[in-house]
Image 1: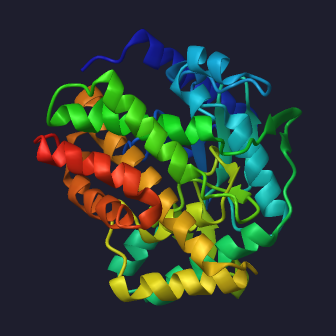
Image 2: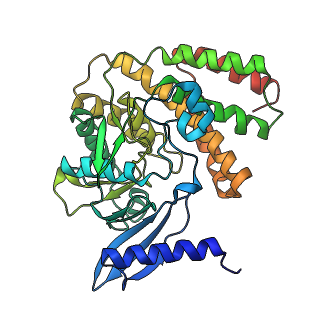
Image 3: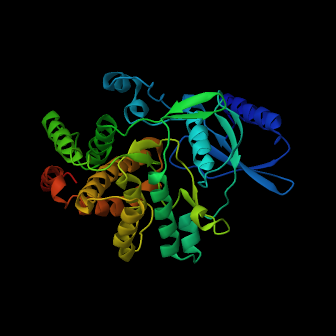
Length: 365
């Protein structure tokens, strides 16, 4: 297949950036594509490795301006509504700097061209949690480290404004507008896989049921949630100090959220089965290490946010398959469905569960 003019231009921009950053003579190898529009390349020269992140801003709808209203966010598109950074690499760079400055094992930023969406970042290696466990690493040890890192993140103070290379990226609260928009992906993409689009009345009932469930989330102070905390975004770094052995990736969409959010992302992983006998000990470990109180309220939030996240993921996976041709994500749906239905058993989600039962009875799910 011939390379398009735009691809030629982007390749030239990457090479210009690498020359300016001192990596122009590096060997370069592309990583396989993932669910995002970003591309990654491994750089190597003189035995030293780094990662090139290529995130062209035009490939995504824009993030929300800091003071945008819900209506203004709606007009800008899904990234703005859901409080996603899109391909704004200032978000990744600013949050990475804040994390490394507080002792967490995020990639150091080695060079940046924020205007063109290009970064050279530290290469943390190939030992993704999922890969390391498959190769024989002890699952319980790795997950305990990941939970301890989450607890440390929660105990740590972070500002609203994250600075990098003269730019400031503001991290907002994970508000109901964002939470509700994400549950809408279930109706927009997952449900039509089995039947037509839901009626306006059903959509209104769906949103109302979720609003009721979200009313249970106020018992604990928010902390920084990296928002995609799972075994394919964590790197095992056994050579580092015991408190820094979990390497962090893919955190540009971070928001201030309930402390259960990243924990449920870790345990209810869409891509791999976490050993069932680990779930409750990991929850208890986090609850204690984070210094939380009111375990029943925490368990409620865990179920609500688990259901919310899994509803979103079901919609995203169907969208990736139908819109983007990435049909491999359909193979992950049964696991996510099981997580979703298990979360819906919590009494705080009875309204949502009732609507799901209605869908099933009508042959829609």
